[in-house]
Length: 447
Image (cartoon, rainbow, N blue to C red; front, side):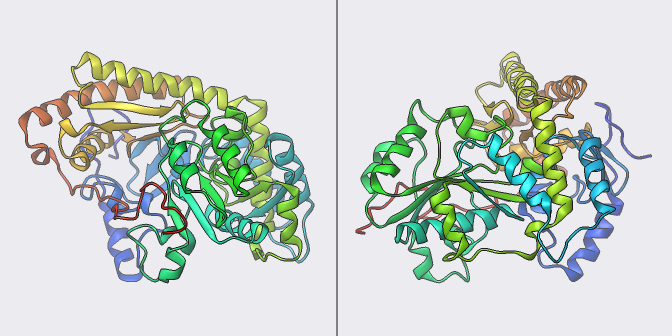
């Protein structure tokens, strides 16, 4: 019988997952379309590899094992799997068609709705993926400013202008790599020192898990404005979660351009670029950024339905309140077990992360152990709490019971000095290795 959600579970039977995986190895390179979903991020030998069903906050794998899911499809599930209002909007549109030979009225309807809820949305552009709109924002910023260089902070997709600064930069010409620089979050003085007349755009995630220092984002906007550099907020994670209008609303600061995807359509593929009308005007004639599926109507309908639900049900407030229960009580459990020197849950309530200190030992081994034991207890765990509207108080109460159970085992493993001996499967992989030009303070443009 497949596992149900119980503290007394055995490790799940993943026979069918492994069979599918063996087939995948013969025909796919790589086997995953997103690194965060791939086998390297889930302990081989313990974790399921394929999910086949989701309902609310729960998912089922290919072997029929049930889990509470805190990954939320790596962000897109903001309301819940198979959420009725969104699914009904998709079914209704499906009766009339998916993609057409001319524009669809839903493109206008969605853009009007986005303009109502996003602070800087003087104009709206619709695409399919976060990487698409990040790259469109960089291209139009370069065109508008007549400059080439970009400063960035965070993760901004797979396109050449960004991924060239990471360790996965094979195939990207060095000339392109040399146009992008990274900067240290919350270090406003180093950014001011590095900005000059060659910097077209500064793009960042308004926050990842660390909170901005008081005034940092406002000072950043002012520094960019004074330098003639366009400020771009990458709101893939912050948009529609921290507030309906994203970080711009939450922190009361406007970016010149802002990009969104993930949470705005509850799992359907769509992305939004919003911003100043004078900048966005360049897409009408000078800057090329088009995609056949940009007006795909099922995603448009889903996005409209999702934003309406997020607004009408006050979902960001729900995520904040329920996420706080999970984050704060995790930290209380750690204190009660004498584990607070080794682990802490950090971040904003809508999206928090369990961390381990260097004193605890090898972080990847510890994360692997925590994951294997949470999965055993029916929680699909990857270190994050990506909250959605379907996460119930019962889900959270159960998760905290599991954390109390598992943290006692993790403490035992740490004190033994041999965490690896507690692992049933392989140690998780790091997504990116840091290299000498990654996450450094920005170089001046003269260098």
